[in-house]
Length: 336
Image 1 (cartoon, rainbow, N blue to C red):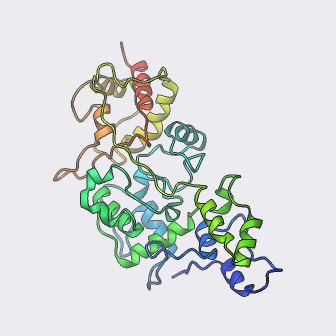
Image 2 (image 1 turned 90 degrees about the vertical axis):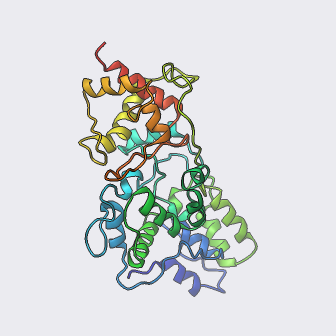
Image 3 (image 1 turned 180 degrees about the horizontal axis):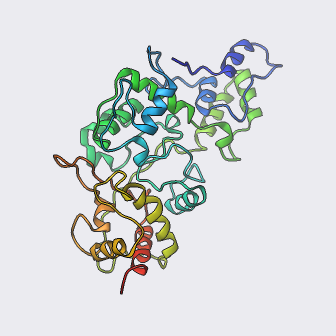
């Protein structure tokens, strides 16, 4: 397989003991490799293990297309990109702000999804955080501090598919490293390349401070807060701002239609049109699986013979105001 051992790390080793020459660390260097070069211990749950037959390309196909090593699909219902982007989705890496994320998604033509992006997953240190323990119970114990455990939980429970083999798992890990954070992705307040190079070369106590400052430049975990539907579904969520139908249109296009248009990942079909708007608007105040309040905040459950289901949106992935904006947009398009 293709090993992830950047050239710059070889340079670091070659230049050891030469404080007058700096190693080759530039804007395209992966943050994961920079932190390792600064002396941080390698994480067993993230480092790629050499396994015959594993490759970045296979990992890319598994994540993007749902293909397995021996052919066939990992899941008959979903693939990783059903719920996760594989590129940057937050303009500020230290904040989980659904309002900013929706604007960024519109500007960059990205889906607005319930799962955190896989971009930078190898840089995070915790998974299935917050309230996900309420949904998955003890399964979270094997996933929260172990990226491989998180991937398997996603493959079997979230995707309702097959567990990954060792070859498939290491391929996915190799691919995820290719979409890890680079130094150029970090904000201006992050350590400079010059500061990093000097810390790598000098091997002094300043290294720990550089590592800490690097990690402070992005979230080490994605928070997850489960919230309930509004107490009164007729009046909806009590929100401070007036719902903007234009934002609701973006939610409908980038979230709802991502899964439901032409039944892409769902048996329930949605599209642009009065009939669809009328149906959703009518069911908002009801206590049914067709109520947007119900499915956005609770999701639906897989059942025998129909394992495709809808994952719910946490507070960090879709705000109450955005749900009201969706309702406002749909209501404006209905037949009065």
